[in-house]
Amino acid sequence: MKTKRINILPYLLMGLVALIFLFPMAWTIISALKPEGQIVSYPPQWIPQTPTLENFTLVLQKFPFMQWVWNSVFLAIVSTVLVLVLDSMAAYAFGRLEFRGKKILFGLIVSMLLVPIQAYVVPLYMLFSTLGMLNSYTALILPVCANVTGVFLLTCFFRSIPNELQEAAMIDGCNDFTIFYRVMIPLSKPALSSVAIITFISSWNSFLWPLIAIRSDHLKPLPVGVAQFMGAAGGVSGSAPQYGISLSAACMAVLPTLIVFLILQRFFVQGIVSSGIKG
Image (cartoon, rainbow, N blue to C red; front, side, top):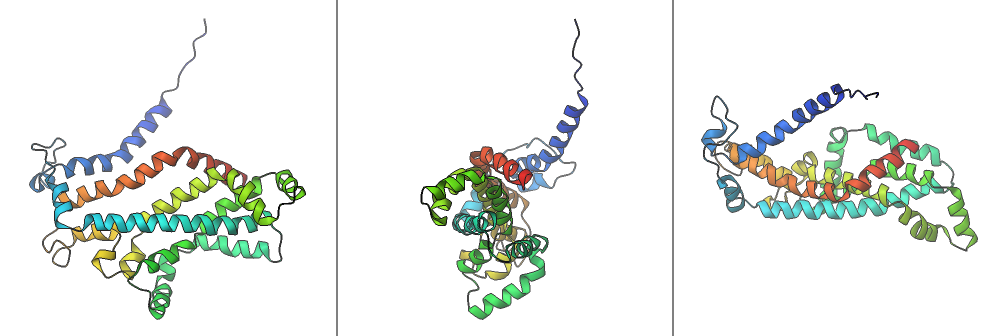
């Protein structure tokens, strides 16, 4: 009887890579459960001698952590909804309609993927300062609505839909908006889920622009607020950096994005495969 040989080398390599990626997260969670003195002790200890939830309690009691969470949740949800609406309409135009200059305009929009925010943050600040919109939710939401990645992914997905569906809808008397609303959107749930996850996580983790645009403590999103824990005299804590509360805040900050990803991960994979490969 012929036995099938199993090559365990790929599994060992994948396990090693997984451990490398999991190590920072495991160390963060374990350190958040330690008293401040044990976090910086040498040699480092994996198992806390006296596990405690004091760091989590201090974060919730001494800082406006829940207000920062609410700000991030509000900004992420509103930004995601606006991006889905605007990007899907733009992508439908690029993917299914014909108009003069479409290829040039789409090329210009896609080329914006190569421009980092550091390249245009100063003009962006001057623009919002002139409009008097700094230090407001509007300053954080409007720049995110121009999501080029979403336009690119959805355009590729719309182009992969057979023309027969659109032609059949036109024969039934549907106009472009009806085809978009009743035919294309229901078929685009995997791609829309991918864009929703990308936008939600991107908005949730946004740091540089909120750090520049927001001054009021009660308007700051969670990443900007958590970063202040590491500040010395000028930070929120008003003292030396406290690693325990910083790590416990980081653990709690990850939970919403983790929940969103676990709920939509099936659609996320389908959307990336269908829009990325066929594009």
